[in-house]
Image (cartoon, rainbow over all chains, first blue to last red; front, side, top):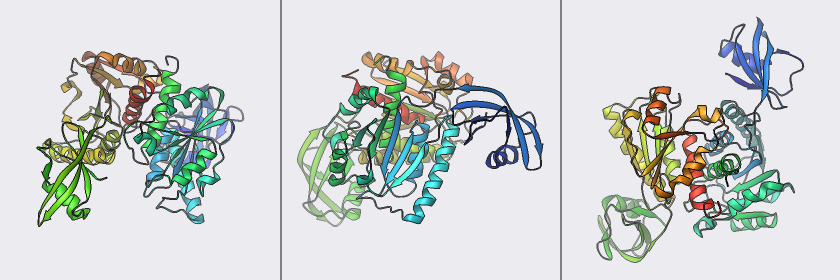
Length: 250
Length: 250
């Protein structure tokens, strides 16, 4: 069933379709009276709605049933990525959203070739949020990940309630194998895991030092060297596997 | 260091650069006498070579040192994918190779929109193998994954030495959580895990039945619905995490 996100919780059983939902549901999808769709509200309820009336540019729907689903990771996964060339950011946001990321923070790495000036930032973030929203709808999530931008890793502040990792290629080459697993285990008393990934050129040693000072720990992601846009997905899938599929048995 | 794959093991310490390596190393990378590069041989040795002579279209290199690296997964991951539209196959092969896949098998799914006729098959497979080779070099692997095509899942034969999974969206929706982990554990006495993924439209129930008859087991890949090209990466990262990073601790 088609799924949409509402910015406000339902006030009662009846809903006048917001402009964007009207456009997609009635104009694009050609839904008629009696057609059903889902709206996900900030309270994380999935509400099954039925179209009850369509008059010109106004359509109404009524609540048929509501349910809560646990499709979000038990701990927040925050993906911090250096800017890479081309559409890699779009790509990381789309796939990362499907894999359960709670938030994306992009930064201008010392080795980043791509640059986002003030004007570009706004445009890019709007576009990336739209991509996150589309992917969240498509993957039936109940939350849309935030997308933010910071100028440099030095601006990163790791919350006390979160653990932090740096995916550092050197660690992988040196065969560091235990930190990722250990960090997943240590999440018990935390609510989020922030993972930092360099841009195509990698992280500068100075950037890694800065992150270590801020409480991030270096971790290897297996013996193979992955592209900048691949490593975050490896991390997210591993975290989902550990927390959502393997933990009871682990 | 630039890495190339040789189809034959080194015969002694000296090598006359094959055409493709000559083109990339000497013509494109402009290597000169004294320049070093790596060649990976079928015996899985990584050989450090040094250019010793360049005369016209002929270049020679000598072996400086050789080492064996364990960058391949301890068990083979075979990715079986229904054909999807656009460049999704290219994409799955590139990222899947970075994540350690041993082989890719594409098939014409009952719900596949894309079609590969005889002529297209050859061209596509050649192109996909080139992508696999490039990704294997870039991710410093010692093996290049094979890429094959079969007309339908009914043509799939699961070897006795392998376990088989079907990533079935319905299972994810129904909250199937244990099969993936259990299968990783059961790999102890096997040498490969074959995982089947539907095309964009998903697998037809009849295809799933066929696979179950062939010994494949249905498995959920977490609570979120992933796109056809995302699910194989979730699977590969989970397998790598379990076998290469978590197993000792698990």
